[in-house]
Amino acid sequence: MASHLKIFATTVYKFNPPNFSLLSKTSQILSLNKPKSLSSSSFSLLSSSSPSFFARSLVTSTMDDILADSTMDAVQRRLMFEDECILVDETDNVIGHDTKYNCHLMENINAGKALHRAFSVFLFNSKYELLLQQRSSTKVTFPLVWTNTCCSHPLYRESELIPEDVLGVRNAAQRKLLDELGIPAEDVPVDQFTPLGRMLYKAPSDGKWGEHELDYLLFIVKDVSMTPNPDEVADAKYVSREDLKEICRKADAGEEGVKLSPWFRLVVDNFLYNWWDHVEKGTIKEAADMLTIHRLLD
Image 1 (cartoon, rainbow, N blue to C red):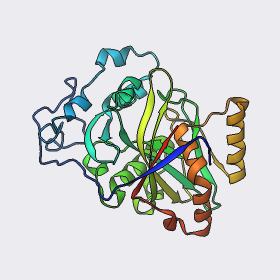
Image 2 (image 1 turned 180 degrees about the vertical axis):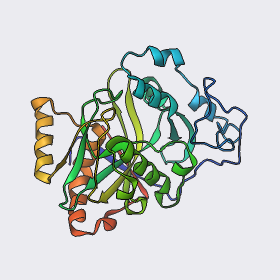
Image 3 (image 1 turned 45 degrees about the vertical axis):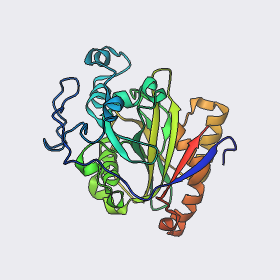
């Protein structure tokens, strides 16, 4: 375990998804059409129930800002602008939503307006090797870093807000495994993901972008077929424990340009090898703790 990390625990006994019966007529941001994933009755800024919500969901960017950003290709621009992340407080209560673009701006992160839900999938094959991916060079945050199998966000849509048995997050994980790695949904049934825990962390990517996430950690053991999407993934490979330790050593030493995502490194340093033991023993459900939110902060 990395000695410099401070670990605190917050116990949460229930989730509070947004009340879809509380609708607002304010159904557009930046005069955009509502996302296709939300029904007309669900697309809402929730202003009726939360006066402070507008302060957290004010759009700080414009379409011109996004289109003028030369760091983004067309695919990343679309995803950053159209995808709506789920804003939460530090005890994982849903308080609103905002674009992926706004949720990853350091100015919003530093202002405390960007904490959102995320998930990290750790997929093992039948030889108990872990599938890693290297993020595409076109990624806005943390391009070309190595990380766990799939890292993304449940979106502000009804299917990915379902709190029971973390179903919304598991639905999102299945969706993104297909989007990023081309893994068919039938290869990764949602009921075979094991949610092991949640962690809260913050990490800058560069001067403009960063992450501030409440991250759900999902494990699954499946042999899968995959066709990585080059817009999302530069490389992918299975690794053993020893392989991963060597990758971490190279990252620490700055060798061969190897870099790891900060969230993946937090999981490696605090949980992964113990959980890997449970994977090999078939006792992974015994390691689950979904009541505690681990605050992993420098």
